[in-house]
Amino acid sequence: MRKILFTLLIISPLGALADHIDVIEVALNEGCSLSTYVAIKDDFNSQWGARNGYQSEVFFPIQSNDLATVYWVGRSANAAAFGNAWDVWSKDLADPNSIASKLGARFLDCSTNVSRRSYDVY
Image (cartoon, rainbow, N blue to C red; front, side, top):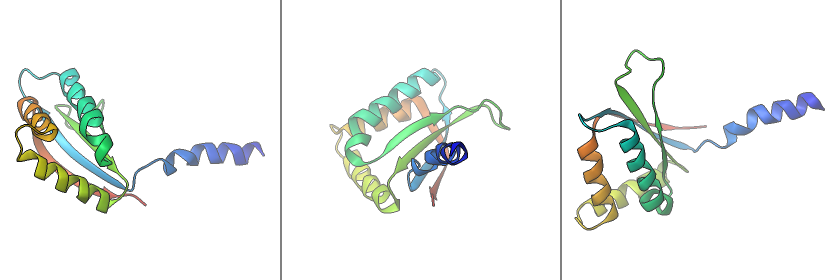
């Protein structure tokens, strides 16, 4: 019984993964700290991501061939949900008074996207 319980505890985090992962490699601009970027990410999650089915984390490398960049890792339920969120984000950027536009300006001031990848998780 202990072995079964232990196995279930090890496997259970896998079920918590989203079905779609959005990974953006980011270089922080001069004068922008990791704590500032994380604060923008937190505002993104609470002000925009939560209502659009997209949540993010920032991965900071400890051991890597590139210690100068960080990784934005966004999660959504599936590729369709990501596409819907992307459509809303893109549309909202056109309105300078929108939350997306204000967050987008903060991201541009603080960071430069180096690359972007997207993954489906099974």
